Amino acid sequence: MPNRTVFFVSDSTGITAETFGNSILNQFAVKPRHVRRPFIDTVDKAHQVVLEINHAADLEGKKPIVFVTLVDADVLGILKERSRGLVLDMFNTFVEPLEAEFGMTSNHRVGRFSDVSKSQEYTDRIEAINFSLAHDDGQSSKNLAEADVILVGVSRSGKTPTSLYLAMQHGIKAANYPLIPEDFDRGAIPKSLLPYKKKCFGLTIAPDRLSHIRNERRPGSKYASIENCRHEVNEAEAMMRREGIAWLSSTHKSIEEIATTILRDLRPDRLMY
Image 1 (tube, rainbow, N blue to C red):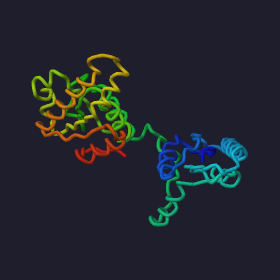
Image 2 (cartoon, one colour; image 1 turned 30 degrees about the vertical axis):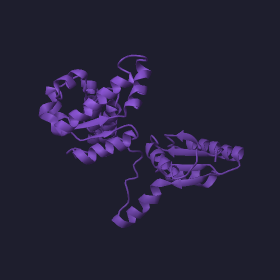
Image 3 (tube, rainbow, N blue to C red; image 1 turned 90 degrees about the horizontal axis):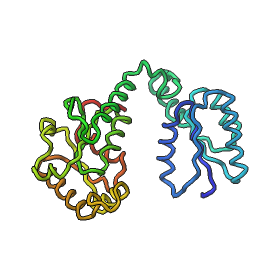
Image 4 (cartoon, one colour; image 1 turned 60 degrees about the vertical axis):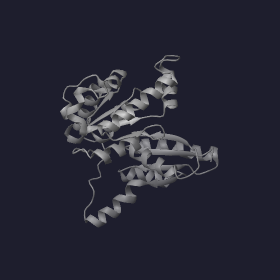
């Protein structure tokens, strides 16, 4: 299916439509063209998207796949009735059976982020992001008692993106600390982390992969040499074993997989979904 288009149409950000839609598409050996159309919350906007869908159908000679998360019945009806795509309505697939099971109608709220000023979950997420940015790469050891998770590992092993993902997706306050040669010489993790060792989780990485990543940042440096990378990774893994810190390799894992493992193993008290 090289000439097939998939549309993600939503009355809000489209994150739900795209995440769920991609999970389904990943079950098939296809690489369709993706078209994102968020904030489709009026009839006029719906008509414009229908024109795009039908134009794609004419060009490709195939039905475009259309994942939708739309609350407004009129907007949804236009997509279903006037487009020549395969419209997959993810909300009603689940909402209608749940309404029947719960014996009540849903609130039909448009978008996950509507009325964010009144959402404690949103406020907590913003606080977690600010915390993770302030405690990135060992910048600060203040308020570590507030941290839900402290990631440790050698430089460029994936700590920063994992910290930010945990904050943005789950509202987890994640700090991260690089393990540096001075720590290996002392044979112990930084003193500032000792009171919070139970919150620590380690990331490691294959030395050849680490060398490749570091060479993109500092080509030809000792920092990026394969010999130095092997030394740092071996020392970091040995230290984490001595300190009893759980760890995993980020070499072949996505950020989502790493974050899920961290949450499963550390079980922080505050989880945001």
